[in-house]
Image (cartoon, rainbow, N blue to C red; front, side):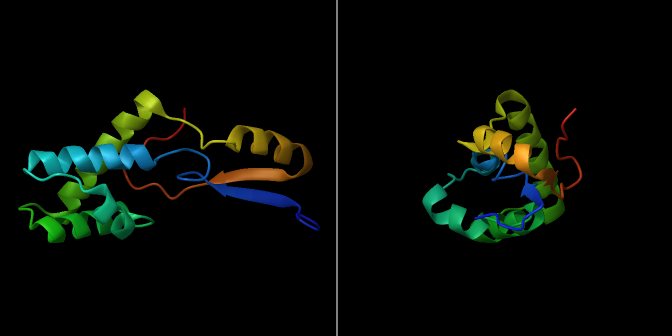
Length: 121
């Protein structure tokens, strides 16, 4: 499967760490503050893989929220950071896979965090 491969690079969010729940929690909290429910089944397919600004634009448009994209996105990132600090988890199976892969390949993790996104210490 990895014949000829010398290195592996892993995207952090959604591959290494389970960030999905943190984004759901933050978006649910913000929408509730405006009087809306977070309808995961409807909204998640529209938001998955999007930047925080793109997700904010979708949520604001979908619910006609009276706020700016920049403010909503910044507040959402702040909330995600708070949730991750309390309950950050690896994706199921990743630690074992990484341990095995790290024995055979050079490895690295990559992410393009938005301003305010928590970084490891």
